[in-house]
Amino acid sequence: AQSVTQLGSHVSVSEGALVLLRCNYSSSVPPYLFWYVQYPNQGLQLLLKYTSAATLVKGINGFEAEFKKSETSFHLTKPSAHMSDAAEYFCAVSESGSNYKLTFGKGTLLTVNP
Amino acid sequence: KAGVTQTPRYLIKTRGQQVTLSCSPISGHRSVSWYQQTPGQGLQFLFEYFSETQRNKGNFPGRFSGRQFSNSRSEMNVSTLELGDSALYLCASSFSGTMNTEAFFGQGTRLTVV
Image (cartoon, rainbow over all chains, first blue to last red; front, side, top):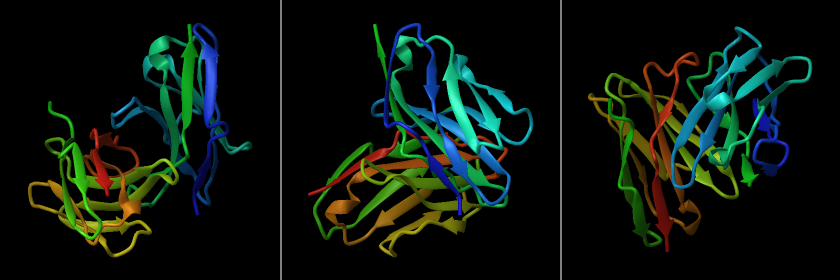
């Protein structure tokens, strides 16, 4: 069965600092991995996805994530945080062959301090 | 083009009642998925429909049901509401529901059961 663990339910950074949000997955088959962002009272927006092509995936708003099979990780990073990055971030996994069922982590709330 | 539209945005119901939520996918999208989001359980998969057929179902009681119409619009129904059904219900649409296609989420319906 697939599962996702996001380490740290709340991460706080200063504006301009590195953002690192951690995600580890468990999957019995090569997975598809996703990062979504959710702003207050909004739905989810896709930041980036890994679908077995390049292991370093670039997404929107300057975010990127690296797939590391040996560590079963897919951590999200951004070199310099902006105030507008404050939101909740969700890592999700979908196993190949699944009929588009996403399994989400519990989420990480990112706070950006001025 | 228009995004995923969920109606209503907010809903207050009494225990024991039933409720129907609606989701209009992006034009041309044939896959619609539903998710329940609560502070305690996070985002959980309810079901996925493609061309009026339910292809996958999450681990929810039979009180939760859904359907999809020929125009790809989808509804989900919850009967005999319980306090624990209070949640944000999110709908996502995609072109085919396969892992390579992006899912676009609506803003959700906030259901409060009193």
